[in-house]
Image (cartoon, rainbow, N blue to C red):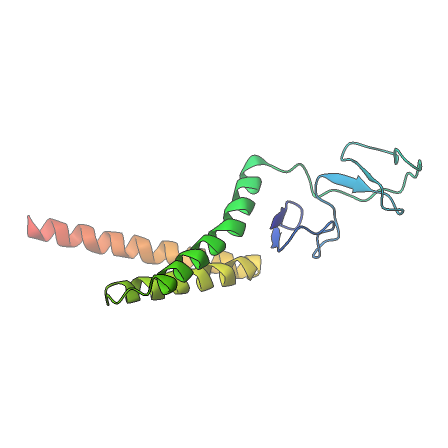
Length: 144
């Protein structure tokens, strides 16, 4: 997965251009498809001044987030398959398997949502956590 710094959206796979804004990631491309450094003003191969625009310098945290978002669902899927193949008869692992599937699905759906909806969901979750924290504090004060 890749994160575009210009339009601030995630893209599945490793495409050359961002499908949302049309910019490239860490390099500039001429009309003939030659790759050039992001600081290039002309194509090093054909000399064309018509180079693509980059989304900006990729930051370290976007690389780490891309790795995590690409690897985490796969790890959860492998964990679920291992649970199934182990054929464990204990009922205590069934809720765990359901939880793993639910978290995987929610994670994938969340990464594909538009930025405005993500922001709305994160704001709502922050508000809910704040209310829950205040509730827990008030119950703790009454117990003492």
